[in-house]
Image (tube, rainbow, N blue to C red; front, side, top):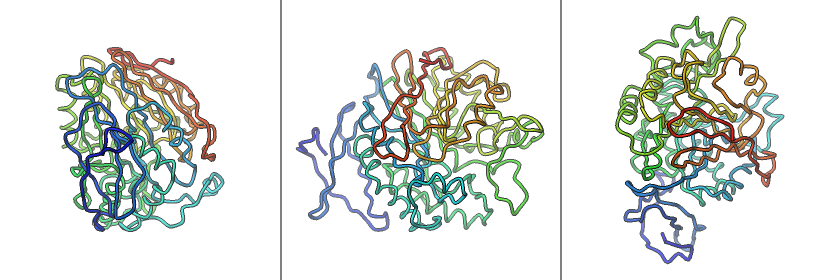
Length: 445
């Protein structure tokens, strides 16, 4: 590890053990805060390319600005990851990855096959060897290699990193709990091996502590949430043998959605989050890094107004408890980032999840997909009259969101590639929004 690309370096030795897929997770102490470092690995006569990372500003310092990229949802089949190839040209400090780093299943529907760009040469993973194979495929892409080499990453998993729409210890196909937890343990282990995570995040069987908090001087207090591992089962499940997956249900006729005993993030994580949000501010901005669309998004159904059971709307009481914590913060300094829905969304966060016209308490941005199949754009647009708090929605483009935090405002730029099939595609700004410190909500720039 070195202070410059000339690699006049500190060095050390670690073991790349087969039981960890020969991965190493080196934690280097004694580094200076707020600066770039370069690094490489050597084994025998083989030497890695040089990578670059950056330390966070020291506690007590007051950075004037901080810029990072928020990304999610990168299905191998549907794109060539030009977004990552262009991301390395951006002036950013780190990559915030909000889930679905891999996709556990190739899509086989006629519509999916029509959109396919490249093949996944093996089947659905279930074992540790399977998940390692999938991660290795994803890491073979030179664009994502370059993005990892260019920036530090802060990552959290979502459902496809294990299995689509899983909820805690339940999987959509309703396998036995012990069987699914064995699969979850394999997925968690492979995820940890292939992502830049610390030893503290190393799984113990099917359990891993991935929710955490990171500070960047007194500018950013980043709170990362795990919305998969601890959640209650999906509400309103269909009768077997139908798969227990996300579906739209009419909110007013689905009392299970409002059951106060159900939780999205688990009791222990919720108590931890309450402490984070209740204590005096550590930084100018508090950012919730989480996987889902956090603001309500209502959709029209013939029988009434629908919500999805896999999102926060499917855990309405748990959602309102978090909203109350955010609303109680006096500075209106909270920003919420999300992914999952395969579209770019800019939204205010209403104080009450059941009343989308209630006062805004935070700004919310969904970062858009790197390469996954796009969401139902026309359906999202048709739902906008039910969602006056949503300022922008676009599910026709792929890319990422460039986030810039300044002392008194935060700016979010939706950076979209022209053609997800083209590995050299150009990048442009689809839309941009800002929020002012102390005044919740988003405005177009």
